[in-house]
Image (tube, rainbow, N blue to C red; front, side, top):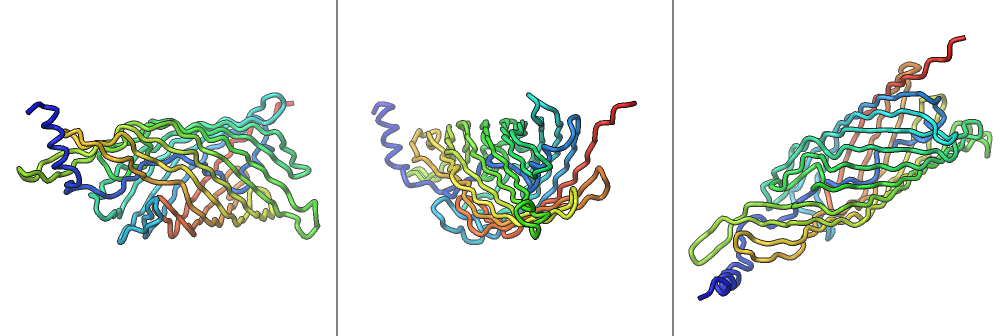
Amino acid sequence: MTSTSMKMTAACMLVGSMVGWQAPAIAGSDNSSDTYAGDYTGGSLPTGTFIALQYAGFSHSNAFIDTAGNKLPNSHANVFEEFTRFAYFTQLGGHPFVIEAELPFATLTGVNLPGTNSLVASGLADPVVHLTYFLISDAQTQRWLGLTDYLYLPFGNYDNTKVINVATPHQFTDVPQIGYTEGLGKFSPSLKGFFFDLIANASFHTDGDGPINFPINVATPAGILPAALTYDKLTQSTSYDVKAFLRYEPKTFQFVALGIEKSWGGEQIAANGRIAPFGIPRAPLSLSKDDFLRGHLQFQFPLAQDFAVAADVFHDFTRVGGFKDDIGAEIRLTKFFFPQPPSK
């Protein structure tokens, strides 16, 4: 019997006889942004302003919803995240121009995905650099319109032997975003201090590298043999995200806002799958989606003229293709370094 026919015979015996891993995996997805209500009013800050921001957050989920919309029984997870962000305000062509960078980290605890080993890879997620150019920045008429481009860099801690990862499988993601803020007080005296914030973006993902390499067992006439389930490539469709806030700002750097966020698209599909070392092909596997409807309550208080604390409390009303957040909260500390006035 030739080696080719031996492989074909082995394939016939082994198809459908996997004993090990059969459930979904989760790769990180870089989609949307962490833009708060009122952030685009920062276009009116003086040129030369430098800002340091520190974020820390927690979210809890009691359900993993697969990409077909099915809830996995007894699935749950907690996510702790924190990241440091820096921003510098300058000008380009007479318009405000902001240069920013951030370094994010995430830790998962209390994870359970039925049918898997629930192993997770926490740590560094994908770093981000972003640029914002303001077409309109008019504090007097209370109108701001900015264009931002986020570039997520594939330097996060991805481990394809783990079921859940906080980083992407070595994907670049580019997120062009439009931010628009309109003060409502000019339309009616009763609306003084109220603002409407709209943030809309699309996330374009490159292909990922080797997203899955899980040890499994297969049943053969000779007994249970160790093998590996591998996928060489991950593709991801474009993600879309829209946030809208109604914000009340009684004074500078102090506000409370209610918002709604809708995200869709971003399906991740693992391709070129096989069972090694037998070379048995496997069908493409849908891992996750960026599909959810989320409510936000945000507020910010200035603790000094150059220091503010903000918070975002959120809840997922619907979710497909990921963990549905029952409750989440994030705290943001902001330190302003304003330019020194010119000496007389």
